[in-house]
Image (cartoon, rainbow, N blue to C red):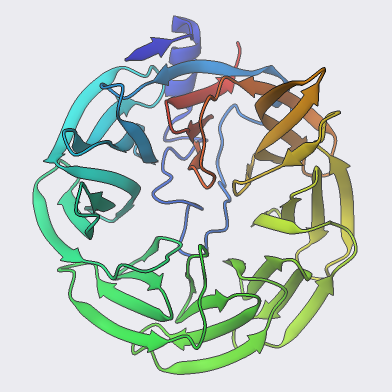
Length: 398
């Protein structure tokens, strides 16, 4: 079901921006193989318009038992995956990115619960758990939904996959695997000597990088899987851009040279329990699990600013990776409070100026259910949040 909230003038303005000053693509969680979370071109969505952010449309699954699995944007079209019970079918559905107009399903797979969704060149990739067998499969389709290949996946703890040109990268248990995007065959595997938990691999140039818990980065040659280097790290969550890989975790925020793992800087004081990051405009933006959001100089590690997204609540946390572009950093945050014996929860999209850290907008989202790690996209001059019960489209109000 689609609920449209925007007007015709907003649609016209947004469409004129696509292809000129806005990039309408966001093909995987984190946007790129380094999961930088950065969008270079955001059209009319800038620090001067972020204070007018509002919901423009929402889309719910077609059946009550379905849940949204993930979302991506390709050339102005939003693709959304869903899955549900054994009697439901996994599906990939399309929407006009600006208007939310329902463009229909291109994939329907009975008994599958589709989760993470991504695209590499002309291939759609979606991970699924079959019901009731709980068998894990990675499916590949053309952009119009024609099946290309499928492979069974190891049934072990995984942080999902990363698309990286000719490879699909996925860790499960203590093994990192690289699959060929063309046909799903295994290009190589590499032992990790530990488990990454729910933290995915990243690729930067000719290297694939994966961190294990509680904090050790391992680098491998993307072509062969041969070990390149390894180094202790501050945590198992990675983002990478330029020539640097950044780690985030209980021991702080650190930067390492991607070429050889040399530590460039570390900060263990600014944030309490940092959890997720994005990098862009010369800065690393990090959220923690206690209401903190901070920016560090990407090269030197100097603190640019620290602000609080917290409210007067017992819990102020973020379970989602931030995104940035148009001189604004965006994060989805969660608040839980108990007052007079009554518990309440609130989920918001917050927008902060990348230069000053000033909060430009707090937009409440009527999210009733969540599991953490849902997709946040910055494509065109819109943001999209793939919550469990519905897909949200957000843009500046005219």
